[in-house]
Every structure is written in structure tokens, then in C-alpha cells.
Amino acid sequence: MFQRMLAAALMVTLSGGAALADMEGDADAGEKVFRKCKACHMVGADAENRVGPVLNGIVGREIAAEEGFDYSDALTELAAEKGSWTAEDLSAFLEKPRDYAKGTKMSFAGLRKEEDRADVIAYLSGFEAGGS
Image (tube, rainbow, N blue to C red; front, side, top):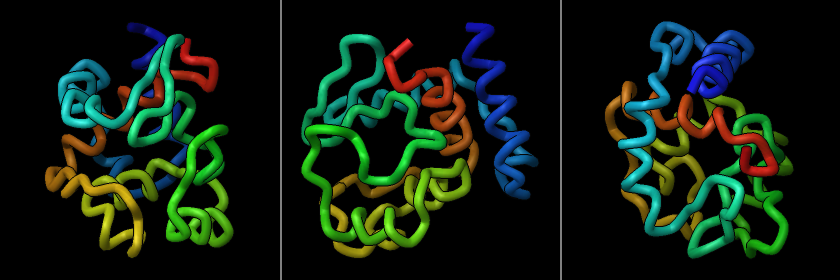
């Protein structure tokens, strides 16, 4: 738990984004918000790609880089443009994925509440690339 809170605080500090910096995410609340994502995504040591890629280490990870997952052209183009997922980019993507990355295969409508996005990003920040 402490590791997740520390990771969330570090993510907000390093992100430099005004919107997310003003609103620190709550990893425990983010775990509840993540339930909306579980049909397509997994996190943790035993995570596997599903309809969507594994999200371990997503904050700071190169966009469209999860091995073994077939990304849409929209996300591979976004990767060439932006490089890695920042907290701000994740927040914008999660708000309305199809507007942020036109042509994405992600059918999720989005998380309209800034607090929900900050919370789920804080939760995801607690999972390193290996799932711990």
C-alpha cells in the first residue's frame, strides 16, 4: 500500500501537469475505478494481454509497446509522436479514448471525472513492469 501511495506521489511530482498536480490520486479509490477496466486489462504478477494490453508499468512506458499485443495504427502513430505515457497523456486518453487517439480499437467510452482518472492512474502507478 505504501509503495502505491509513494508511486502515485512520485508520478504527480514528476508529471509537472497542472491538472493532475492539483489533484493527487488515491490508489485505493483507483482500484475501485479500475474495475471498469478489468474486462479488457490486467495488472499484477500474473497479468496477461486480453482484449487490451497488460497495464503493468504503464506510467512512463513507451506507448504501444506491450510485447505480444497488436495495437491499432492510431496508437502506434501516437507512440511515434509522443514516445511514452505521461500521467497527463494517460488522463487525456482515459477521458475520451476515441477523441484522443482517433482510430483506437479501445471501445471504452472514458472516465469523465478528473478525480477518477487521477485515482486510476495512481493505482496503475503502483504496478512496475514486472507486475509487482
